[in-house]
Structures are given as C-alpha cells and as structure tokens.
Amino acid sequence: MKKILLSLLIGSSVATFAQETTISDALRYGVENLNGTARFRAMGGAFGAIGADLSAMNLNPAGTSLFNHNQATLSVSSFNKSNNASYFGTSFKTNDNSLDINQLGAVFVFKDDNAKSGWRKLAIGLNYENASHLDDYILSEGVNPYNSMDNYFLQYANSRSGSVAGLDYGNVDFVDQQALLGYNSYMLEYDTPGDFYYTNVPTGGNYYHKNTIQAKGFNGKFTANFSGAYEDKLYLGMNLNFLFTDYVRTTSLFESNNNPLYSSGTTILAARFDNELYTYGNGFSMNFGAILKASQNVRLGLAYETPTWYRLNDELTQGIATASTDGTNNFSDSYYPNITNIYPTYKLQTPSKLTGSATVIFGQKGLLSVDYIAKNYSNTQFKPKNDSYYTGLNNHMKSALQNNYELRVGGEYKIKKWSLRGGYRFEQSPYKVDLALGDLTSYSTGLGYNFGNSKLDVSYTNEHRNRTEALLTSGLIDPARIKNYNNNVTLTYVINF
Image (tube, rainbow, N blue to C red; front, side, top):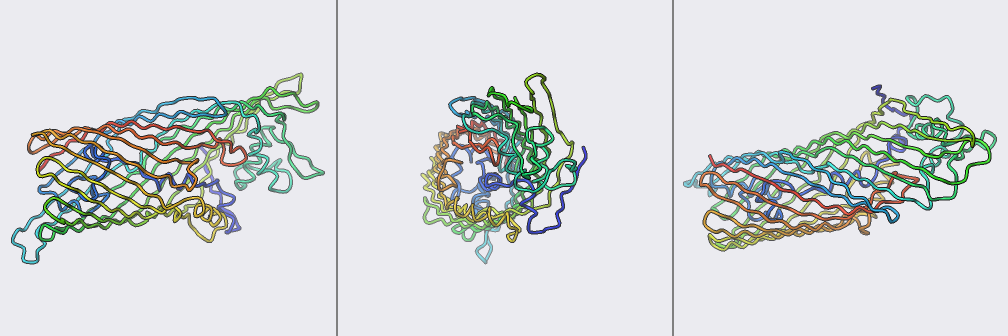
C-alpha cells in the first residue's frame, strides 16, 4: 500500500488539517481496565494496603516488600465483551471473545534480619500486564429521521474555496481529502459561480444507517519495581512504568434512502464510507507508595502515580462507494485512493492518580480492604499546546471532564487451604455529564487453592458501563447508545522459589 506523510507549511494548522482527534481518543488511554492476577481481580483490585501480589504493585509499589519469598506469577484471561447498541429505536447485540496471557511477572526478595539500619527487607519486582484490553465489536443500525452522512463531507468541502476537481489525494491536506471523497464519489457537486458544494443525497430524512466498528489492540505495561521494609512497620516503594500501545479501529458506515429523486442530475441511493485508524506508540509514568502497619491487624496505604506521558502515531486509510441513479440508468462509483496517511507524532498526557487504602486483617482467617482513587480527567492534554487545534481540544476537555473517584472493596476468607474472595468496584464517569461515557459498576468473585510452594487462583468479573458512539466524528453526530457488559475469567498460577 502506498504511504504518504502529510506535512503542511503552516505549523499552527497541522492538527487542524490532520485527522480528527477527539476526547474519546484521549480516554482510550486515560481510563484503564482492571486487569492482573486472579486474586487481584477477584477482590475488585482493592490491594492498595494489602500488597504481596504482582498486580498490587501497580496500585501501590510499596506492596512488594510484603512478600516473604521470591515469587513468579502467570495469568491467562478469557475476555467476553457484549455490546447492545440502540440507534433511533433499533437495538442490535454483538459479542467479542478472546483469550490472552494478560499478566506475567516475578518478585525477588532480599532479607537481612540483623540490619542495623532497620531496613530488613528489599524487593525488586518485574511485571508485565495488559493494562487495557482494547478489542471491541459494535454494530448499530436504524433509521435516522433527520441527518445523512453527506453533512460530514459538506462541512469540509464548504470550509475551503474552489473546486477539488483534479487534485491528487496524496498531495493535499485532510480537509481537501474529505472533500475529494465526497466529490469523486459523486455524493457532492460543485457550483462554480457560487463557489460552494451541494449534495446529491435527496432530502426528506429517514436515512437507514448501519455502522460497524471493529477494534483490535492492547495497551501493555511493563513495570520495574523497587521497595523496602523498615522495621517491618513501614513499607516504601517506587515503580518505573513503560507502556506501549498497538490499536487498529476499522469502521464502515452504510447509508440508504427511499426519498424522491431529484428532477435533474443524479440522486444518491446508497453509500458506504470506510475508515481504518492505526494508532501505535509508547508512554512512561512513575509510582510512589507507602504502607504503614498501624497495628497488628490494620494497614494503611497511600500511593501516587504521575501522569502518563505518551508519544503516539496515527495512520489513516479511507475510501467510499456510492450507488446512484438519474431516473433511467443506475450507477456505481467508488473512490479508494489506496493511500495511508501517516501523521506527525503527537503527545498525550493522561491524569495523575492518588490512592488511599485501608485493610483490616482477621488473623489467619481473612481480610477486608477498601481503596479510594482520585483522578482529575480535566488535566488530560494533547501536545504541542501551542497548536490551535489541540488548544481548543484541551480547553474542551477541561470544561467537559471532571475530577472523578473510584471505590474498590475486596474481601477474602480462608478455609484451610482454600480462599474464598469477592469484590466490588465503582468508577465514576470522567465526564461531568455522563452521556458519552457513564459510570462503571463491577462485581467479582473467585477461589484460590494453596498447594504449599505454589497456588492456583481463578476469578470471575462482571462489569457494566453505558456510553455513546457517534457514527462519524463530525457532521453526522447522532449517537448510538451502547450498553456494554464485560465478563472476564482469569486463571493464575503462582509459584514460590
């Protein structure tokens, strides 16, 4: 496939004339899934003051110095994502299933019971997790009584001056490319005397839409952890987090209508607009944490995670096909330039995170733990800041997003070698008005069996969250309302060495 790099002479307009970046692109990396070991997931991720779990160190890095032995952990998860999409009264349900090694790590513990300094234990942890599982499949369809996809192409075509006839898709900016897609598919016509574009899509409403979204990808996180225990009462730790993402989102929007034909010229009967967005890059963040043994049965934890600083790259491929008639003859036209646009690297800063935790331990029988997490999503930023498009988008995020909270509650009860676990998790929407992405509610449960030097854990998690998906990023923004359910099963094998 031919690839081009869109480089513009006017630096302040780079993002404006590149692909449309939206808040949902930022939240794809700012909102993390709850992944990790089966024990961690079964207890709702409420591990900020528990520690001694490879996934817990992502929440509070001090927790690794609570390990008593070297330990290695491997986790495999089954992901089932169900989406029920409702669009103008019509509902359609889809499912996406996958199996993945979502966690792999080890911790190395160094003890010195005679240390005069009081630092009697040091730990080094290395862990990989699938921080966000990005696979998704959504199908929404229905009859829109108001708007056609031609609004998307018209807004771009009429934002410029002159005809795009004869322009080369591979040598123009994003605005001209969208105008070319509409013009070369005969959806749009150009009025030379008036210097404006008009549509060949008949008016009257009642446009049937079928929108398919297929996403594949992940946001992986590798963590290097260092922690220490002072007098077996105070535990301190830090993480260096290296993130990398690989994400492909393919969309196909089909539209048809039965409206009266135009008296002259051609009339568009149906159209299909295809897009494939490939995003890849890497990021970095740090964690700092502390756990205090307030008493023999009570632990308190406090942790801070810096913003994650991403460097991302986008590649976009587009094409369109139409069916039309002049009342006598039928026509089929398509415009697939077979070109992938490679855009300049941009930066994304996701919000920092502050976690407060408390755990009550009931001897050898079990424990109850609570975590409270605060993140200010309004601090999310695209960079460079001096770019006019990113400035507007950042201001929009500052006004639309909020300082949200997350509550996690987890419990464990031991019966000889068995462990029974349960958890609850509630995460507030990052939006002030939660229509675009609603609150998340999650319930989890699990079992564990201790063989002595090894353990086997299993968990089941059910998550529910509502959100909306616009059929196009602009022009046709009537959204489908999505009810999303995630059902995940995780199996973890733990071995001490």
